Image (tube, rainbow, N blue to C red):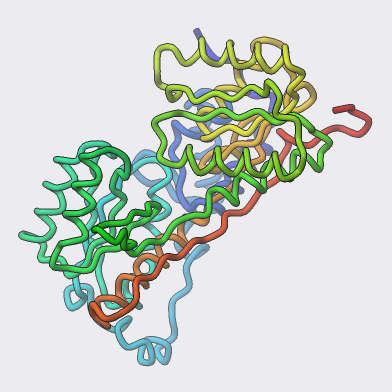
Length: 380
């Protein structure tokens, strides 16, 4: 069945696309179509118009801002003063980077790492691996060590379960420095920390709850997939902030579900929305964008107005701004994560084992859009 076209005017659609490009750098045509609720044919027409105007560039499978719009060539003096930045790529130390996804959340982190690598005197050798496939992570890391000759490793391994604990112990014992990205862990009999750069997801969830409380909501539900390693920290921030602010948690709808690809997802959504209606819950924090967009679409199918009947805040801000209505979202500083991880690892490579272990947390930000802001006079 053909999806109904978005009520947005062509100019509004194109402005939404440009706004997200400025925030994220690149977008896929399929993701734009899904988020806006239009066909890929419609998106391709918009893309063709923007490309003809010279405000975007087409790349395989998607679009990006023109390089002259997002980068600036350094002056000769800056290159001369930069030291390691003047090194050619072949002269920089190879650093491995193993990530659990190459098409969601992680591309911006990878881009940040690559952007920082010249100044750090390293070059990134990238490998993707399934988040829970411990054997594949070992295999990819082994290849990076033995074949690519890496001098350091950036990695986001699983952190729960016996197999994950064994993997983390193995990673910590590698002959090269290791920095975890968006993961924290301890090793050994004294529970020593592994060096890490992470988002303060607990704080980020708290931002969302404070915003919804400021909009007058006293009952804020929570929905997130069990498959995400971020879910526990986001839930903790939701719960702790709700308690701190004296919000009503009695009977509040809270669901840890399969992700949006699970065949039972729609049934979980209907059950959750029924609980919201039955308990008078008029706001919800949803991790991640894909689950939030799916929930809003189900609301529209059931005649539940967003934000009039249910305010929604998404967590991730990958494509939240392309939804209809545009979703308020918590945005982790993903490029900054990649840059900071490279800088931290490069410093350890230079200074050696005597350097103290660093654990850096980066705060996300809240981007307020239409899905959570009440119209004047609407009661909560």
